Amino acid sequence: MKPSTPVLTPPAGAPEARRQPQQRRSRERLDRILAVAAELIGEKGSDQVKMSEIAERARLSIGSLYQYFPDKRAILRTLAEGYAAESRRCIDEALAGVGDRKGLEAAFSALVDQYYELMLSKPVIRDIAAGMRSDKDLMAIELAESKTCGALLAAAIRRVLPRADAKEVGVQAFLIWQLGEETMRLALQHRRGEGARLVEAYKRMSLRAMLEP
Image (cartoon, rainbow, N blue to C red; front, side, top):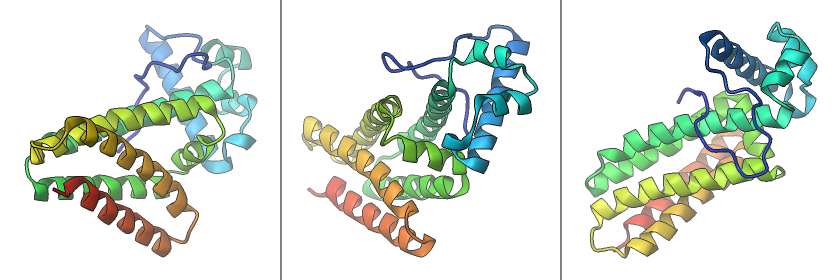
């Protein structure tokens, strides 16, 4: 799952990019800022990254950087929205063709495995995920995404179990998705082998819950 530019509506009161680029040069500059920020966060962690470092590596003046983003939190939120948007696209594609139990099991398991591997391989995503517990704006993004992706999962479950209560399935799918985020955070705090076992346990529990008669 490759990160993309953000498409989500920012949470109320959240810091946001000052300039919405219309010209190609401005869009390229914004992409460069985000790429540099992601690189630095991956190297040092978001707490240690300064706006001046982002400007220097992006070959911008600090004033130009502030024309795009009022502070570092706005950059973090924009990165989070971009990763979430790309993940949602992948989830939509994976679940769209589900029509039976085996298909649902395979698609859900593959998505969980892909997400775990992504978290392991992308330090910037791990950093943002960890920060969601202490930043209300990032938490709002996570909850909104869990609801959206939960709805995609619920639609797939209802295709497999058409007689299931739609409201119950919706609540269950949202809970499964949000518990998935918590599972990833927990798994990343352990060595890879133990973390992988936690992820496998989550998959088994979730599949039993969503496929029970």
